[in-house]
Image (cartoon, rainbow over all chains, first blue to last red; front, top):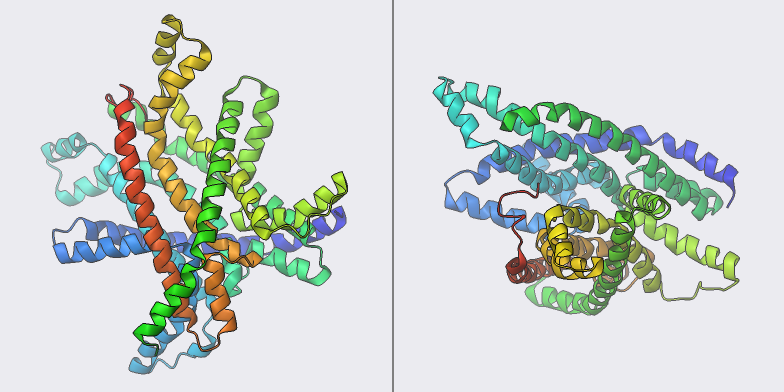
Length: 234
Length: 237
């Protein structure tokens, strides 16, 4: 162990932290949007749609993320090629940036989990709240924006933020398709001088500190969001 | 395009990796779960000297990606053992390092499931048991643990599935488990389609997941017999 090399690696790794955080945030954002759509789909009464959705959900939750990533990495260019040829977009599919495969596979995967979080949060709002809103003469739209959504969000946001830290860790698999995040950067750092242990220790340190800081921030947000909790149920 | 016979052959090739994956899962789960019982007990104890290091360990394993932990153990442990005991363990089977990594990971991680489950059993249950003359150990074995099981089981089931999924990362070290086989097919046979190979491996993992879910569901039904009154009034949140 050479502490000088660890320090060098840490400074090298710190440069990719913003893009790791950014990419995770992008995936989270898409995941939440798609997850909300999934939640609405699940509420429909159409049995065919529901059946297809169940099958897809089971597939995405039953297969490891790693395989989703590789399947999309090899499969996405041909899918894009079909559309590109159809509409003359002229996209160069042979050199498709692997980051698209990461974003698409991670978004679909996390949307399946996030839709469950979103569903649970909306369900956790008592029906008495909604009935009270109706009794006060709120329209459906008003009821959703003023009563249902705020209460559901105060339950969902902490869980979604928690998922964000999970995403940062899961993004470490992206080195397989040569997308550079914290872990991939550590591998690159060690490739130059063959000092694997130092580089991995540096990466572990960065992850650890990052997660501790994020968790601390998120728990403050959670506390703030839950400030009405006691009164709400009384 | 590949025909149906090719896909069947592909599955046959992939299935040769399944026993190793299953052995790995079983070994890691048994060791990890046993370890987590000790970790949980240590974290629940009132000794600060036991509590803090364990909390630190849990914080570490929860913050660092499993693939990084795998590399840390794989590259770091031989050096550590070499320096401490002067033993050369470089030639040991890679699977040993994998099992060590996952055992430590789940040993620490599962305590995050078991600890809240233990704490969810109400204080009155302990008091009643003490009142009936149970010792602390007897209270835990006969009263608290049966009740905490029904709370912990759904999460434990999820973690087994998680373990199956995370075991797919082992191939980065060049193991010959299910995912390793898939990777080997892709890298040695240039006529193979990576997409199809990985997808077929995914199907096998999918079947694993479904089977485990069914088993967990059956066990849950069985264990719910011990469900205490902690659950009836929704007091577990």
